[in-house]
Length: 47
Image 1: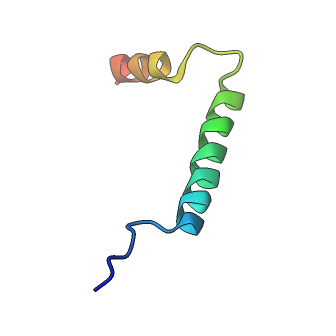
Image 2 (image 1 turned 90 degrees about the horizontal axis):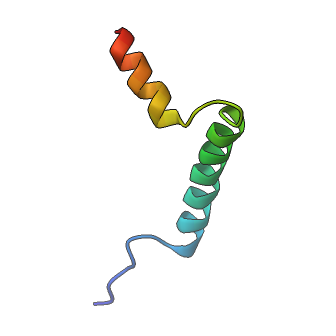
């Protein structure tokens, strides 16, 4: 009985593109602002 890999190469590529685009978008949106972690800490403080 052959064991299938958890992820195929195609799935890894798809997830890499999705995650890469999300991270790239976040970096682009916050390019002139403090890092996202500081934004989250500020939001939690105001809540």
